[in-house]
Length: 267
Ligand SMILES: [Zn+2]
Image 1 (cartoon, helix red, strand yellow):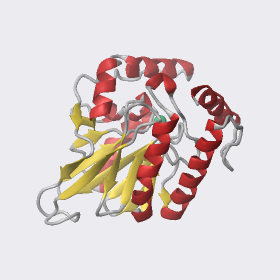
Image 2: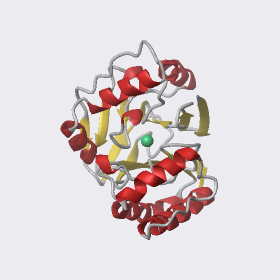
Image 3: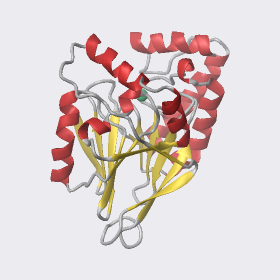
Image 4: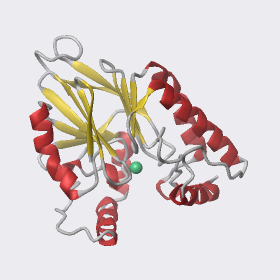
C-alpha cells in the first residue's frame, strides 16, 4: 500500500491489489474517506495513518457499489457511509452481494481472519448534488467550510458518482480514467458502453480544471495525463463498438485482454 500526500487536504492511498484507491479529504474539523484499499492489513493501518496525518474520518463515501470500493467500514466500523442514490438503489437490490464477493476473493487468495463486512445502513446522496464538509477553522473554503460536488458516473456499472473537491481541484472519479485498466463495462452490474462514453464526456470539463484526477484503480494523474487517458478511452470505446481489438498503449496485459473479451460481449 502506498500513501501519497497530493494536497494539504488530500491523501490518496493505493492498495497493493488492483491499485484500488482510497482518498482522504479534510476541511476544518471534518474529513471523509472515499473508497477503500482491499487487504486486511491495509485496512487495519488506516486509522493510525490518518490520525498521525491529522485527517479526521467523520464519514465514509464510495464512488460505486463494487465490493472492493466498499471496505472502509472494516477500518471505521462506526462511521456512516454515503453513496450516490443510484448506488443505494443497487446495494438495496443486491443485498449480500458485496459480502459474497469479498468472501470469494478471500477464499481465492487464502486471506484469513477478515472481519465481517456490515453494510446494514448507508445513506443515498442526491446526484448531482453537494456535500458540505467542515465547520470552523479549517483551510478549505470559507471559514473552514467546504462543499464537495457530486456528479453522476454510470457506465462501468449502472450506478456511480464522481466527487469534485473544489478547493484542491481534485476529481475522484471511480472506475474511469484508469492508467492501469481499460474501460470495464460490467454488464452483469448494469454497465453500458453508451453510458460509459457519456460519463467520459461529462468528465471532460472537470478534468480540464483538475490539478489531479484520482481514478478508482491506479496512481493519481496530473491533468494532462488524465486528458490523454480520456482521449484513449473514448477511442477504445469507439473501436469496441466497431468490434475491433485495439487496446490502449500500456494497457494490454493478459488481464486487460480478458476485460476486453468481456467488453466485446457487452458492445
Ligand atoms: Zn473497481
